[in-house]
Image 1 (cartoon, rainbow, N blue to C red):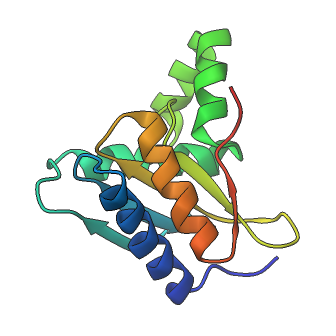
Image 2: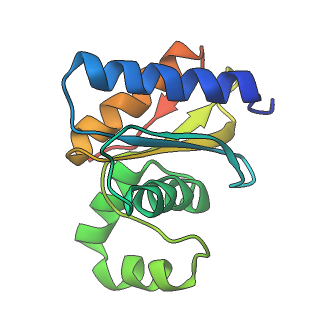
Image 3: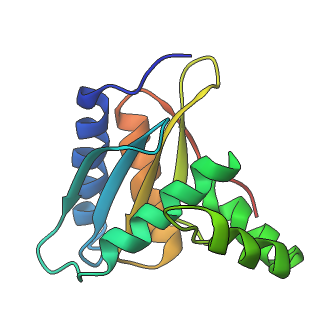
Length: 145
């Protein structure tokens, strides 16, 4: 397994925000966590609300904690609501069970980080994260419905 570099994390943020502007999305905050859940890079667009960091962090953190994209966490929340609610109270850093928390995988498939995006609807947040991860030459794993 490789480590997520600062250069890759910065590329993810830049490309995710470029995708957002190209799609005329609402102002986003993009947060990249490394495999230890430590912040590696973050940027908030002008106009992004103050809570966006907390939401993006919980999306990325939950994906890392459970080793699945937050889209899969949303499915789990539908299928096992008590379990997911319990997780959100015990996982330090929070958990959001909705699209926008995308695992970052290296070429071998190992998890090396996660990206959390918040500011638009979940599907658009997720698309921005995937665009950023792909631009960095890494594999995006948003999870499955």
